[in-house]
Length: 114
Image 1 (cartoon, rainbow, N blue to C red):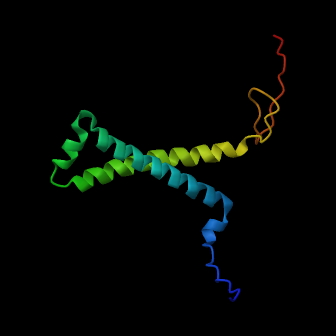
Image 2 (cartoon, rainbow, N blue to C red; image 1 turned 90 degrees about the vertical axis):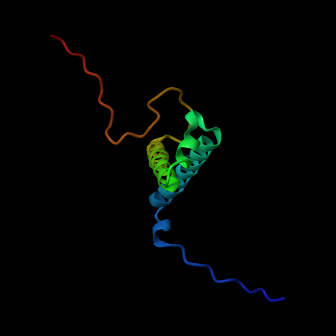
């Protein structure tokens, strides 16, 4: 038996960038959620939605528009959540808020006398 290693495929340049990889993974999660939601809507048939879509001359257009709108919504929500979660502090020793790193230091409270 020979100990032959297979040549590795080069990783695309964009996937080497951690932020882009984070966004791509979360976009895929949002797309999966959108596909599940559209499938669930077609399966449950609320308000006879499935019957209305498939009674049309071109049901593919309606399905594409429905899926695209959910894909935009859930994909951007998942990516936005991932970006906003980047500033969270890893240790959870303190309870309550103010556990995030702030780009602008917090201002000290000043007492105002009139």
